[in-house]
Image (cartoon, rainbow, N blue to C red; front, top):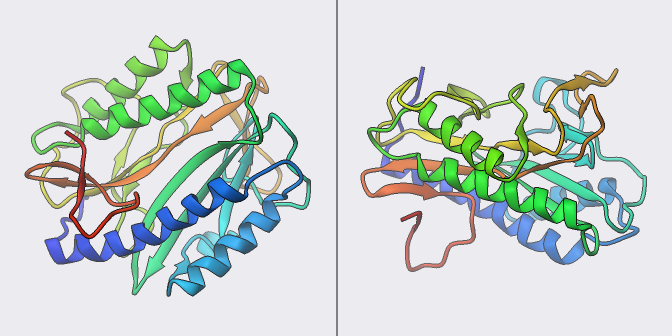
Length: 258
């Protein structure tokens, strides 16, 4: 079941979202060939602590790190490690910040150095698909509208959507209702209402989208070894439209997708 948030509670989630956005902004300047995902993980945990936040993923269902770091064919939940990133790699860094018990979630795919043309196209397709999904987070629309828009955008770019993983409500808990599928039928599913806070986080791949899980019980990778890209924001459904809570914000006001 969905949990509706007040304006004050959305503001609390937004504060956590600001921490996540600052972490990603810093990573854009730090990720480079030779850097390890374990170094990234430690940096994020330190920066969150400096901002008065905690990494909500660490310890969640036994997960041992502050971030998920998914390289190339890993679609999500990859463990940070000490292997240096190489020129041309793609890495998705997914993180959840907790500020005073309220949580915000965002993932971003980074290219290590200049991406190969196919990788650049995949990243752009994933970014566009996420934004198409975000644009559907309007009062009166339905959950299925989000997935349908994402699939339409992915297909336009010759990509597949990984259907094994979904977005979700978020607030006091990392995962709340409703589940937000990234494939769907327009006009189906729960109706979106003001006060809902959701994540939109489609994973796009160049292959068929089928995945398997490593022996660690977490790391998910494509069966055909095709590469993946993912972008995610935490979104509040408002009367004025979708409000992104995990992007850098000025004191001027909220970021609302027109």
